[in-house]
Image (cartoon, rainbow, N blue to C red; front, side, top):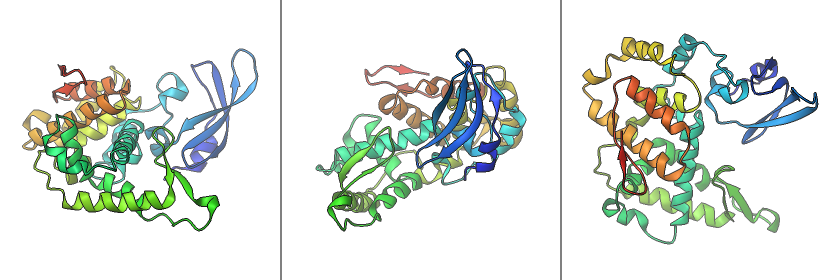
Length: 289
């Protein structure tokens, strides 16, 4: 849960040319701050996406400060609490956007029994079957399956799934699609190596997602890796390293295909620093590590 009291206390001079002077409010998808332009002195409002790690762990995000204002040891301790949290997908900007993009993809293919063909689709699309079996995807689809049915023309249409990958449709169509998708997911037999139910037990996924959200500069990496090795041991010695790398490779490849976010390079940099090297496949069939 986002701490409104902490948000209200944020007042600082950003290195990006403005001062944060006040908290204006929080909506379903965004947080709004009052700022003062460093050049003109004009008072303006700045809107930021709510699902960013900094807002969930009470640490100023880099996109607001311009330079790090967090303490690495403090961030490490807070991330440790997120390992195994089934709602961790909601705390990270890139991960949240990835799940939204995949659900948008599910809906775009609603008129086809596309899960039937997932096993024979080229990688990484066949791994979408593993993602739809995760707690995180099921929770999001269940939310849509249980929305209230339309009672009048005013609420006949609904927009769901966030601002980046919005799904606009008839309310009753959304409910029927979500219920059908949940049934398909339950019946889908996944035979890959993703281990969907353990996705956010992967400690390196948590730290890499934090890096994608702007935490851990190159100078911070050694301290983050030292903390990881102290708590979880060296990654190369982990008996589940093959599964963990498969999870990281799948998430990174799907990010490349569906959201193409610049944060992906920081995601991979943290993993490399910790000893986790995995292939990432782009849409042209190229592989990188």
